[in-house]
Image (cartoon, rainbow, N blue to C red; front, side, top):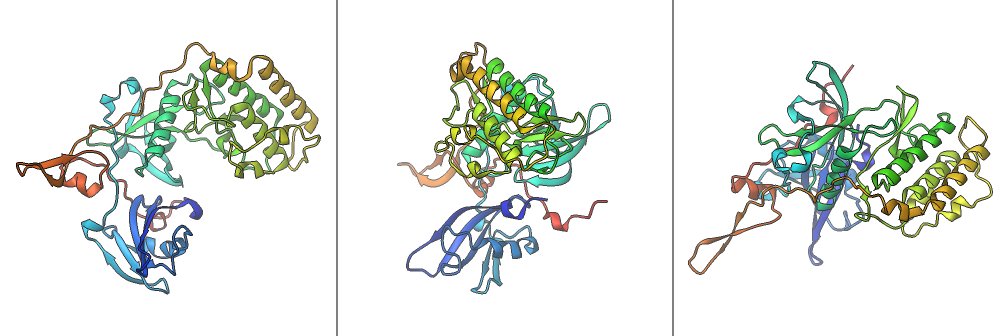
Length: 403
């Protein structure tokens, strides 16, 4: 089930200084739909997210046809709107699979073939489907259901990175590209579902020395052989694979290819240092500091790391190995060695759907309607006869309980 603290994304609040009311648009990742709540400014001050508890109180009891709902000063429901003009859902321009040359050869699965098992977080579900051999495959389905160009760019980066990764025991690889059923548009992808949870999920699990060896080895493979920088190495992005008793690195949405997408302070050597420090000490303070303001030496140069997790060897063995690995990476040329990888994987620009026009209402000198291009609300796409994929689903609390 999606954590209550990450279920809602507040996208915009609208108010006028001299008016007492305020409207706030938000997205519910559980039901995967956009709604608007109306209340009083004194009740929901802008940018303070005080409307979230009220939203949580009502959201699962609203009809799927409701676009806007209003509450009084006590947070009680006083009205709803199902009028199309109150629907502020954005149209998402998913590209057709057959128009994206970089995905040629990728295995696919239709969205209708996926059976939801659980909702793991915003934009990621645990699902299963029957493969070509009639075998049931359990997967994590990752998708972008909210129209934000940065989110779509990150999803595109991750998909392009995963499709180019060669087999590796410590990487979570691409399983299938997910297509919607009407026009075969690319709406997401799947990876194998790994039982065991992440290092963050298992703070009391014995941490093995071989896991550090596996992490540094796979980072060297990504950086020095493929020219890929993960840029988000952290305990939350490392699975413990219960089947192999090894680790799997995942979440490539911040990945860089060569200089493209490379950010200061997010290199993978730094990520490994912070990860090991957090795993051993339980201290994650550095995760709350912007990456451009962090100084990894404040952690790396500490004479002692307080051990608050069970290790299969003395902490000195972990730290000595880390020190030697960091020194070797620096001696081998550091970031310059990464940038000199000769053959980088293909990573084309984000694919967009055809930019169909819709009539905005303006006219030319002859009185003819002038088409307008670019971002549009779902309601405008529908008026233009444009196909759109609908993400809405019932709230998880109302689904039949699984055994």
